[in-house]
Length: 417
Image (cartoon, rainbow, N blue to C red; front, side, top):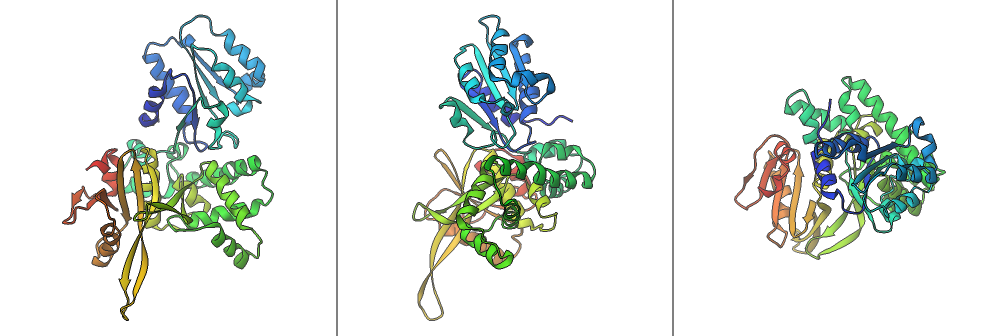
């Protein structure tokens, strides 16, 4: 089974021959190597590039053991460049080579060599890896399968595909499995023995149990505002642990750097400023999140919200959580301030969208809850409510766009309706 990843393939094609090192980053097992060594290589060959001008080195293989020496690898590459025609170098699992940053910087001096690298250990997964290449690294961020990618190879109808995706997520290997037990065991094992292990080793974490519990807390709290102080209080009261605010903050940063989770900051829409406290955290893959909780905590509203957030990131948007201040009068006539939440403030260039995500909008009370935040936004950017189901987009009397999840996920330009 081959899954098309055209969104990322087009990003590589667009960056081809730009004089920079293309650094393909993302969570382990999300398809980085397949994108480069299969899909992009096929594109080059079909574009007329001679196979002898495509140099492939997989440093994790035993056949490449000698090439893990940086000087040996550098000279090996130079010896295979026989003429002045363009060459394309694919270096997979580059972290197996000590001082790989120096090797890559040296390769930049070869004008007719276009360099692409991937890696999947804890160091390479650091979100600041591009800075190692002195401003000449061009990052392509890869995510697990979007729902559209997943659905393109799913053998079944939309409803079954949606239920499957909400539970087991979009890691490409999981899609290959047919048994639910295979999927759950694979996800549990990956989280415990690969992802968390990477974070522990890279950052030399001693209190491993606390990190695991922190991951559980964040998994339980997707879609809910939280902060290190609140988490520290939970540890103190329920675990009798002195897990400090600073340590928790550092560990959250480590999980973010490893692409396991993403942080959505809170943005005051009327005040046009960021609010430091109570960010939201979302998991890069719902299957990993659910596996961490042993597939127990399945709240469809929060899972939907997480999937919408990830889809917006895949599409290249900057995403924050919005806050709108409103003022009410209580029964005694006193004026009181209240904060309403807008699930996502979505920006890309001059475009902005305000998005609410609702699993169920059948009751008048729920409609009032979702619409009230949007009504109090003091600008004219598009306001969208995404609801569960297959509803096609329509506008209500207030100009708000309501669309079903199916339309949003399967139409890349859905926000433009």
